[in-house]
Amino acid sequence: MNYKKKKLTTTTRQSPVSMSRCTFLIAAALINSCSASADEHGHGEKEWEWMGSFDTPLNSYTWTAQSIKYAYADPAMKIVVLPAPNSTMMGLHELESEAAHSFEQTCIDVPEGGMFAAAEDTCYKIVFDANKGTSFYTINTTGVAQVGIFAEHMPTEFERDAHYLKDAAGEDIEPVAQEPDPSYVAPTEKHWGDAIGASFLVCICTLIGVAFLAPNIAKMGSNNPKILTVATQAFAAGALLAAAFYLMLFEATHLIVPISTEEAGQVAWWGSAVILGYVTAFLIEILVFAIIGDAGEPAGDKKDTEASSTADIGLPGSSPRNKRIRVLIGVLLGDFMHNFVDGIIIGIAFSGCGQSMGWSITASTIYHELAQEVSDYVVLTELGGLKPLVALFLNFVSGISVVLGAIIVLSNDVSNEAQALLLAYGAGIYVQIATTECMPKMHAIATTTNLRLIGFFFFALGCVAIGLVLMDHEHCVPAGGGGHGH
Image (cartoon, rainbow, N blue to C red; front, side, top):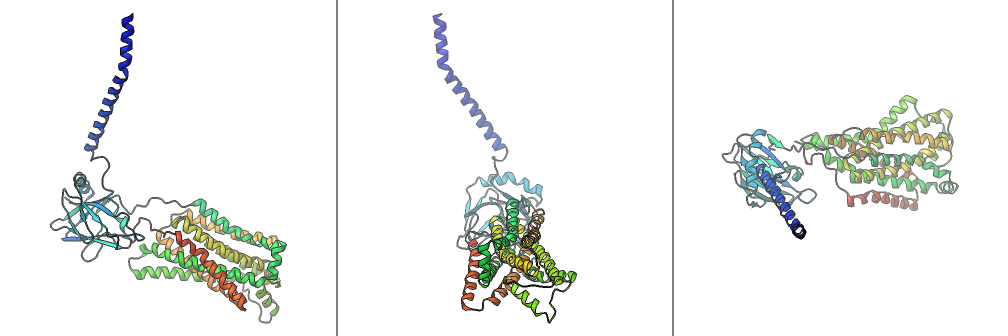
């Protein structure tokens, strides 16, 4: 009995040691197994992110790397260049074992302007010159008909406006086979919530007339109609021009590259889109009044002419019934089309350029919508003879098209080329509204030095309100990451 107790005590003391040994042996076995598996399958994770095969009948080629926004994606990149039996995908995969072995070697630093060759058992590290926007390297392919290139990073990460591999004549050399394919573009977030929310914010601007129902605001507007008009029109003009020139026109140039390989072709498409946007309002006006009839006053109708001019700045006026109907249809239909285009522009900004660009475009849209809707409300109630609540309702219905435009764009996969053309087109529309709608109204009323100073102040304020976004703004990057189209 005493023996059993002693044996039991001894066994209890040894149990933790035995379990520790067992655990250690199991862990060692697992480690050995994992190591063997890694060795058997090419050392675990591959050292390269991209591989490509090329036909190389010439003796040398130029490898190019470029900085993006004044900085390289990495300060250096490991690269292995191997003679290949052929340039097929199968031949490229046959080189993977040798590529893994070459990456295990101590990599040779190659400075900007240096040379490296197609060779086995050799790893190079090309070091980019941070003081230069483009770094060049020569690949010696003398006597090598095909090569397989294995790079630590996607070569397109270092493209801005030049292809990563060129021959002596400067012609782009494309891979016969590559993995992964840089042209594949993963689906990007379209920011549905932001875009639809922004569209509804613009739509709510159609209810700005509610402000004029408030006694104090209505009194202020009636007492200072010229100051109100000068301030709102100048502010809207500044915001619109800033959005067009600071953001939309410039962003379009980044995205329009794939449309044409020639610079002249790219400029032609870009410029035509801007001009079309500029004349769109005029074309809509032609279409609307071709359907409903001419809205111009008879030559001797001085009273109607005065009513039209005073209505633009919020002064009372009157008009005959037939002209009133044409004005209502023209304003509401034109507003519907205008807001529809605004929705398309907002959708493109969010889906193609991200939230920063999207909210900047939304802000400029809201600025000019506030000024426009004040004018629309006055026209609908004064020239159109509508009651305030009816005018607000119809204005809101015509404004809902901004949401429709955003939904249509977000529901479709819009190419870089289409985004570029729509941004340029939208910029043309913004320039037209600012220069032919807002500024002329401001100039016509700002007939004194004080009013002109007020106009300039609010114009500058509108520019600054949009321009501030440039402090934390990233340009739209074409899908695929390249700065040019192949």
